[in-house]
Amino acid sequence: SPSLINSMERIRKRLLPGADKTDTTSKDDLLKQIVQEGIKFQQKQTTTIISPDKLGSLISFPTMERVPGCIATVHLKTTLIPTSDCPDNDPNKYRVILQGTADAMLSGGLLAVLADTFSGNAIDDGGINNQENTITAADILNLDPETLTTAMGLQTVLSRGRNDGMASMVRVVQRQIKALIGEQNSSLDISEPTSDVAEEKLNQLLNTASTTIESQKDTKQKPNVAMLLSGGVDSSVALHLLLRQNYNVTAFYLRIWLEDELAHLGECPWEDDLQVCEAVCEHAGNVQLETVSLGKEYREQVVQYTIEEAQRGRTPNPDIMCNSRVKFGCFLEYIEKSGMEFDYVASGHYARLEDVVPSTAMQSPKKRLFRAPDPVKDQSYFLCALTQQQLSKVIFPIGSYQKTEVRELATHFQLPNRDRPDSQGLCFLGKVKFDEFLASYLGKRPGDVVDASNGEVIGRHNGLWYHTVGQRKGIGKVMNPLATARGPWYVVAKDQKRDFVYVSNRYDEEDFARARSEFEVEDVKWILDEPPMEVQEEDASERSWKETRIDMKIRHGPRIVQGTLLLKDDGSVGNICLDNKDGGLAPGQYVVFYRTDTDECLGAGVISEKHWAKFLQNYEDSLESGTKVDAVLK
Image (cartoon, rainbow, N blue to C red; front, side, top):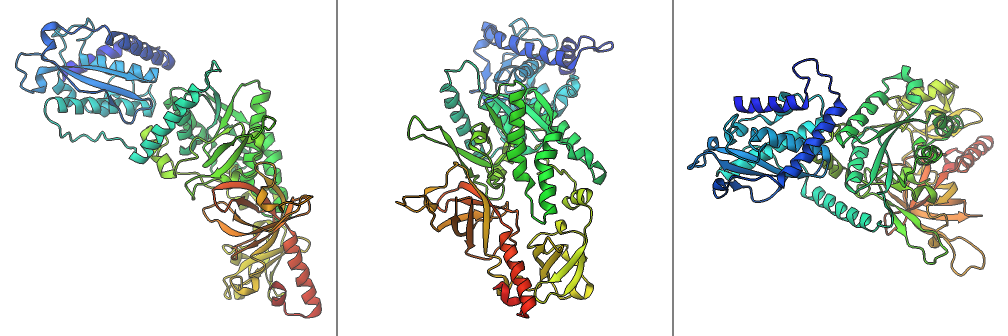
């Protein structure tokens, strides 16, 4: 309607005084002015006086209703004031006044702008008899919620989340108007996008947070958290949960060297990721975002490890090193050396932490690590190398959530990246393929592909590092066509000295049962620093070990395998016997240990080369003696 358009223009000119000329108002100045509008609105709500002759005929929505899809927690209530003595439920005969609250100042300012726009100047002097620019309930019902911020010149100033939030406020007002004039069955879809389960979890978390902060009254300031923001949905939801738990949050984007150095191999996503992080921080109320380059640290701590392990023919796990050495290693050192005072570092990992209550005053508190309830997204495998010193500084805000619930919360918070797909691949490669990364640093070192059953050379590979034990996909490319036809073939071992890759087309048969279920682990470490009691002999005068039933993950994913662990010597090495054959036991691969009766992660070890060294020695002996090679595998 013309009245509503005039009211929008009035607000626009007040917020953008240079609108008729060249507008020089900066974005920050405009946002500050909107915040001031919110402050004045809250003061006016407590002092606005309605004309006495209208008090008896006004009708108000019974409660403050929460607005779904807003960044902050916003509640509002609509009051209809008749412009005639007999309005007869005609929306053309009612003015609209809004009341509301918001727990974020910018959202409160936007609520004030909306209330002032819909009042048509009616509440400027506290009265209702001003007939100039009269805006009726019918005008508001005919408004397209999505066009409001555009018409007022605010769309490009506000983030997508703030624009969506304004539209949601309009929808709630429209529904309340319809309810008040008897049209209860609104066709507008303004239902909460969050499921009851996720909403209940969120409320429980907020209640817990209130208790936590209440218990921290000995500190004058709220806890400071450095939030590792990647641009993905998980870390973005984690950021919002921290804000709702009353933490002071500064976001950090870790920029790593490899995405620039290997840009020629494919599209590098870091610039897109950083832009998304900026949008998420703006959407969350202009949370401070810092970009940190840890190029030298990544090169030394993660990439060099990956190259060296691959060059030795072992299977590296860069993601475990990325977490223990960089995200919760070098980054912690960075913020400490820079003088930044943070109580915690948070991330979007799926894992849970619980405090261990010290039994005596002399003992230091510790943290236990647990699997997340979502078995597919659980990332405790990648966190198995974290120390107690690191865990004491870490928060995993989404650790108790299912992935579906995190997606629902992303919609609930109206995150700008809520529809972004999950990232895939290794932590530092982005969209660069792992084989391309290896080729860039290690090049080619050809060698024979050997049939493990008879010693026949049936192909030529380009380097041991391109193949891993248990591999099936891609191995046919380096084999002779006649041999390929006898497949499927699997990599069963690698000989570093001769550059041999051993393959077999009998991998699923009993020939390899022992080779796929018994192996040795080295570099065994425990989350609580000490081996759990169940792996130790009771009542022994000196520490000794006993065979123990244990759950394990041999790679990231939902699959948990059962077997036994028997430590040896000083406890840093041990033998494992699985109940069932595994798809591929590769030296260098991490094996993570869990309790059989809970989700607790106890520690981890690395598959040793000794198992395959034994295989190769038996293989050589069989060739010299003429023994059938199959026999050495059993």
